Image (tube, helix red, strand yellow):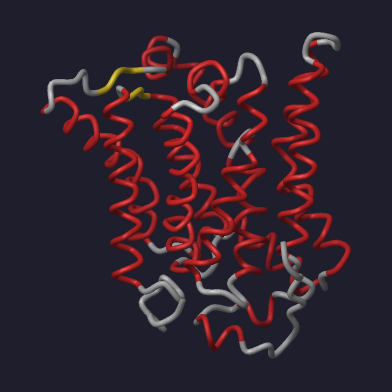
Length: 297
């Protein structure tokens, strides 16, 4: 995939990006991370698919969860092996530091997915479609005691083990030598490919609802690549907050779990994602997506 970039004190990255990466990036190896994460996730994920008929259900579930936590496990391992204490401290602080995120950015993070889903539903209705249907929303309304454990489940098995790796480690390192746009697309492609084993595991939403090779499959895969630009935009404008990425990921997942769009609504939602990404790149510039240093590849 390329070479690793070994970043040290006074690397000049901070001045180029307008962030604090330069003094908190010793030993960051994004290409090693991407290679190991995809390798470990595919090994365990495809093993779960291939062995599902011959091993106990709990073992299949364990393999699936190992695949799911690979981004966090690999990032933590690489930090331990090659980064100094300052870099490690910065990495973990960005996962829990609410103070990095301004009030306006909290609004963007929490409203992006609901607003996009609502607009897609309204557009679908205006075109004669069904708009939106409740998925788990109805179940949670009927059984309110399930709300807290369900929300915790959506955090723990999704954004929490993923975002420290994708955004907190890989994106952070890639931006040291590439524009924010380029880094976003690289992470987005890897993030998309990371989901492929799920399409081969019986019982998953990807296998049972989306389906491998369908139009819905391509929308699903490409949407992650495009949406990765929005993750970087928010990440860079919240002082490299991994927590911001976790919250955005949670909001997007929760909207998808709570409400279901029609097929046309999903196409409209995809188009809205693409428009939002284009606006961000044009308005904030491809180099940093922060409005500074707009020129760049």
